[in-house]
Image (cartoon, rainbow, N blue to C red; front, side):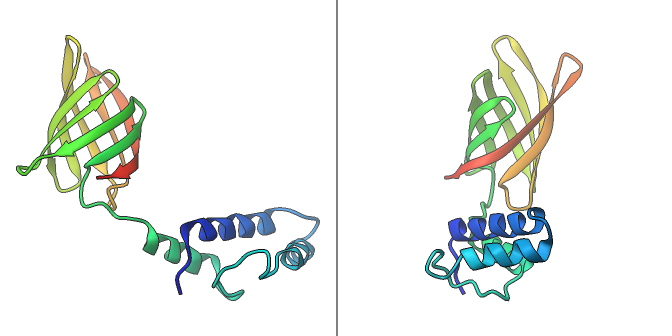
Length: 152
């Protein structure tokens, strides 16, 4: 069974609305189910598919990156990361740039912001679609999180 991400998200939102709204769960469930027919939503998802099955379908269709290369939305603004053949990572963001080395899912880097520079670390999620980390600025640790925008 193949479900597009858009359809799966719609279904999850629908399931959330069903479980959260209405006078009673049963009444809300029936009224929303009656309103949405196969004519309204064209999908191969069967009524018996539960939320866990939908999430598995979505995860199966989400691209998994093999590393940090790509565009990122971060707490420091948009960042573009590039990985060379030696595993060295470079990146640019609005305030400056980073240079570092990736070991597994951990990127240890040096950042450069004008005359300011220092060290930082990102820990990437298993699918390399998000990270959390920090950078040290004059002895103060600043949180730096990111979510992937595009895989290169």
